[in-house]
Length: 345
Image 1 (cartoon, rainbow, N blue to C red):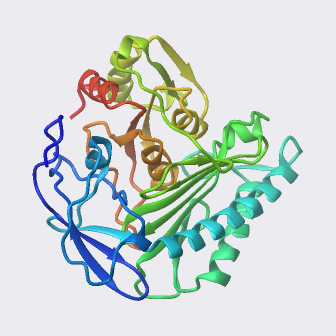
Image 2 (image 1 turned 90 degrees about the horizontal axis):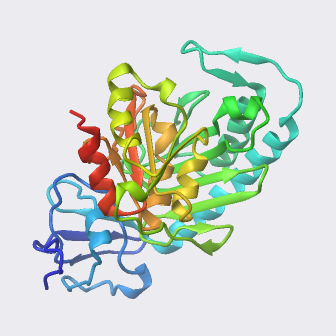
């Protein structure tokens, strides 16, 4: 089978992992120029344990978003296990939200970290509220939080929870409810679950690999926008960019219909719901973007670095939280146009 776009050309092996068995199937998809994150094109319950090879129909968007392990292998976690992870992620967001609402627009001390970014007791208490649920439920899993860094009882684990209790602390401390709590679950380095939670507005986006993104339980989709000149663009602030990155960003900003500022992770949530077309940011840490990936991809959008490559962080206690440049788009055509305009290398 070939797609109209010419994307579906080669046949990688897809491995489904479940507690009881392993199955390998193949799908006729291409190897994109850069590695993409995994999307599960079928429910786990629909795959018989002894099936070895079968053809699957994948949309061009799924083909673009597939990510390969090793040469051609995609790793997918069993649906039942994913449901349990999602349940715990919702519990974590509830716990963090309870803490954050208790401090919002109240008086508290603000501390400047080494990088001069602010942190509050709300950040720290919210992260601990989430971490306590993980430690109780999944003691063998690792935790990487913005405030306390890496925690793991085991020397190695396939599962890593990445937490940002308040993404947008400056918005939080100035009383503007466009910050959010970010929760990502990585399996063997790949984000398979992501949560963007706005605890004041009580809005929660949930992205799960291979499923549609939801907002408070209702499916959402990014919108089509095929021309940069019609796009609504968000960034938190161009003042956070380096000089070179700001010049690159300005080349895109000058071509869009409306540039907008100041939404932190909430801008990505708006993109997933079809209200925004493009988000471009620079200097993000892993806890700033890993949760966004399943949410954006599950809405039909695309999220990469400024060169169009996979956003990948090697999750381990020895990996530094290096900075990444991120571009997310609801439509593949303006994603390509934005990359071309950025002229980043």
